Amino acid sequence: MRRQRIDWGRWQTQRERFCIESDIPPASSGNIVRAGDIAMDVLRRSAFPAEPPWLQSLRSEWEGMVGKQIARHVRPGQWRNGVLVLLADSAVWLNEIKRYSQADILLKLQGKFGSGKVCALESKLDPVPHRA
Image (cartoon, rainbow, N blue to C red; front, side, top):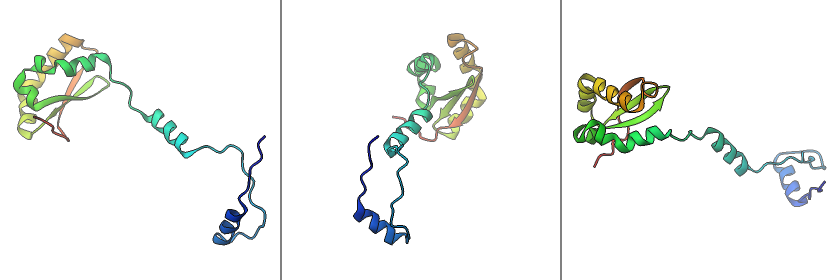
């Protein structure tokens, strides 16, 4: 076991700053973990899972599936538990998708990827519209 070296000058400064009465510094627990290691562990555990291959395929084939006009204003968003979110860049296109195109898009997606992958669609305004 490696013995901990004590910086006595630092200990005296801390002792004065925090009004510690004892002359003996506290013993180290021996299991010191760096903050960077903790941060990396937290990030690793909370990282989003990778997109399934079929969803990557959907994103690349989106324009061919829905047409150039719709693809310019609507994009596929998050997919969870069989529900795919469609993100529209304006309220006009959101209404257009909800009223006229959502059922057709769902049928095309189910035909291409299967009804088990996409069970329903949900349309929302795109929080970050980035259209060319």
